[in-house]
Length: 62
Image 1 (cartoon, one colour):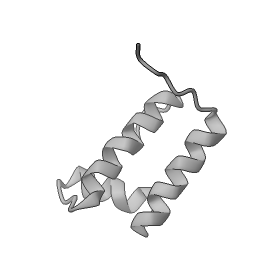
Image 2 (image 1 turned 180 degrees about the vertical axis):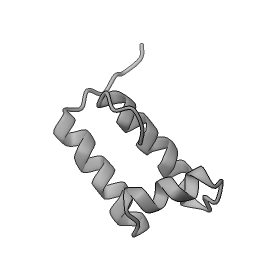
Image 3 (image 1 turned 45 degrees about the vertical axis):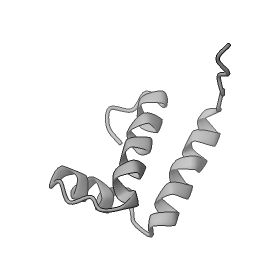
């Protein structure tokens, strides 16, 4: 049986903020790095998480 976590929009936004705070970057800085294929280390995994969060929030991009 699969367990499914349900998060509110506020929880998703808080998670996004925590990810960016951990990296010490703004969403614009990380987006720019992703666009130019310049993600390093934890940034790649963080970008994937941010894209998932954006999708769950119904946003068109991370």
